[in-house]
Length: 442
Image (cartoon, rainbow, N blue to C red):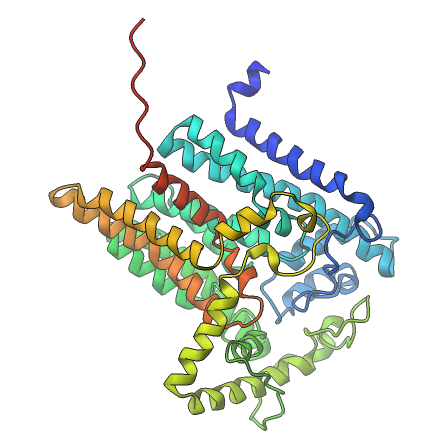
């Protein structure tokens, strides 16, 4: 016990791990097949490659993956490799069971990151209370038991902002920032090359010396360029995902059929990998990574451009309101869920962290932070304001992309920022509490 007290982050990790494990075990009997807390398997997800192909041709399936960046399918391929004799749905269930276990660890790591950041700025007692509140949030519980990369993305984003905050303060977090940025690029299609521009502007606002900034931007650029060159050579894409046009059309509340006649770029031979020619996945779902959908995506892009040309300013505002309404819904109200639907404390947290209450929290937290900066004088005030603006730009980029280019699942994309915003709310609003008087000398 004394050893755990001397390692608070390990203690928090074990507490968070025990918490999510106990929740899953408590509701195990209500789960489908005593496994699925959410009705969707990882094989059901539109962006995933079939786990059968991932085991049969792990490298080729990832190399010829045009539907999404490769990290999530690489994890599934690694899990599938442990079950060489399982087939069909048995293989799918074992991989999904492995994902549930891995997501428990990611959930616990998220809590540790939040704890560490709050502890540094607000002290251990405030951080311990923040952990208690975070464990009760329905959103993290939902996505810790949702078999896609949403939880992993939010954890990486929290890690990114923590490293970025430290790097902007002059600390030696450059390599860490490069690492997490590259992993994000390979995990979510949100992080395309425009994000690199946003990052560069943020570093400039933070007045990071040019040489130091380049030590971050250059390696990220090299990785991005190399991977996108591969995508272009194989698929004629300048992005990490061919799903972009489909999502873009959804953002306009339209469905693009992909039937427009367009000149198709030269792409790789579909016989190079099974995943490019298989029509269905193990569970019968359509395989979006096949060559047919790749060709369709170019037609969808032309249809999207045609929709944009016909878009009026008034309609654009209407669409933004629709998407923002989805975005501000509770992140845990994405769909039905065995655990979250039975949490007695669910509604108060959802009420507070959605709709106009979320906007009020964001404005109030920003106002408290701004007041603290304005109380500073001279160069310290300017540096503080620009540092904060530099931190805010990547968050604004993520929010803008996930509002404008989606309509229907925007609340799930808001969870990308939920752990980071939780830390921001907690640290900012803690400044409103009366300071604890110093202890009297013994």
